[in-house]
Amino acid sequence: MSTANTVQQLQAEWVTPENFRRYGQVIFASKDGKAYDTKDAQLNLQNGIPRFYIMRLQRRGRKFYTITRHMQCTQCLGSLSGKDWLIAVCPPDNNIDEPALEEIAAFRIPGNCFIKLEVGTWHAGPYFEHEFVDFYNLELSDTNVVDHFTHDFVKSHQLEFEMV
Image (tube, rainbow, N blue to C red; front, side, top):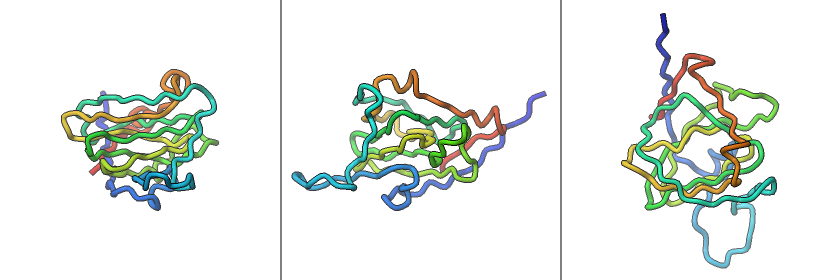
């Protein structure tokens, strides 16, 4: 006999540099010629060959039950064509192998910025209700092969999440 999973709703708030600080950075447009500073993405890509590519994702909805992190690099994600999207995150705590349930947060990302995830930040997404969205993605060339640690909440807690 199988038991039904519990669905926990996460209220997605619009991302700002302040409310996203625990997880990474939010980068908005700046004037051409601006000197490099702390408002620029602070990248960690020294553990391999950087890979910058465009990935096309089909409608993903708002529900998830797995969350992933990368321990060897930062990751940057942003949508093309100005489409907004959702992501759930949990702060990096590099001393444990499981995200802290009480610290999972959801954010709505507008199409005029990108996010940089800190090394070790747990993330589920991008999620959206558009037919498809093209995303630019900056990570290492082998991130999804050698640096892809996933936690399954259905297996550990019979739990799914829905971003609302």
